Length: 341
Image (cartoon, rainbow, N blue to C red; front, side):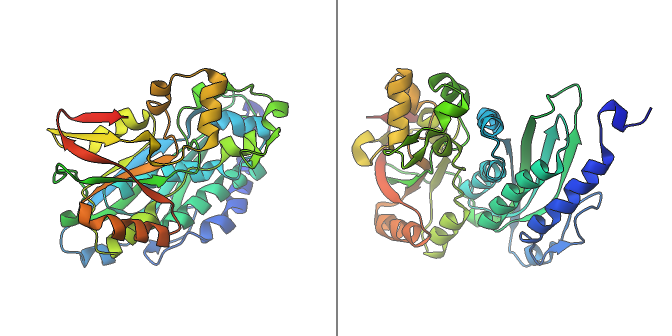
């Protein structure tokens, strides 16, 4: 009897690390010390020491049941982007620069090629957010998870000058709300998605001209990463007063999180074109409109609160970073919360 006979293949683990190294290399920053394979990831604080009053930020998350679509379609090269995005977007939301990321992959059986594909996506997410992938863990769980399934989670650490932290404290009556377009459903609400659409390869492979791709491709589109967009706004000299990452809970849960007491957000539904995918979901699932806005991003991945005088500069900076941006509402005096009208 040996470890392999119990369901854990150590040699497969070695092969996974070998295959993923080429992807991890692409994410390296000068501050990274050592290479992949150590017991911990090392990151120099030399540059941080040069900051006036540095504050560390962190974000951790997973991908949720979106993984079920990856299993069904046997497509694993983008799901890692989602894992990174869910973490680094939260760091960026506070005005921070993500420094490094670590992932955790739990699987029923270690298939090295599949693990390498997952890490390829993680590395791509790190490249997009300009943070280093300095370590991770792949854990084989025979008997606990089906052999062909896995789970992915991770966390990111970032830094920001204390004076630059986006807290929402200075949001005032009359401030403008700017939305940054999402790339799709992102990584939330997939338990409902899987109730709305038949979860079969045949149904997900149907091409829809209105989507410009198959339904499966539309749903698996990775979460957009907004790190460079937020840097662009900062470099344009705009002081973002508040920022909301529209994740699980949609507008109703997330927008109020950036507001101080006594301020209310008003979001205008007709201020931008809701992507067809969300309209299709609402129609097919007979989902009430309130539930849609309480579950999904509805085409807006982030909402920024800025002074009226900074609106044009903010939108230009976002567009220069490759984003679609639009005015979606305003802040008014009132009970802390949000109205979607």
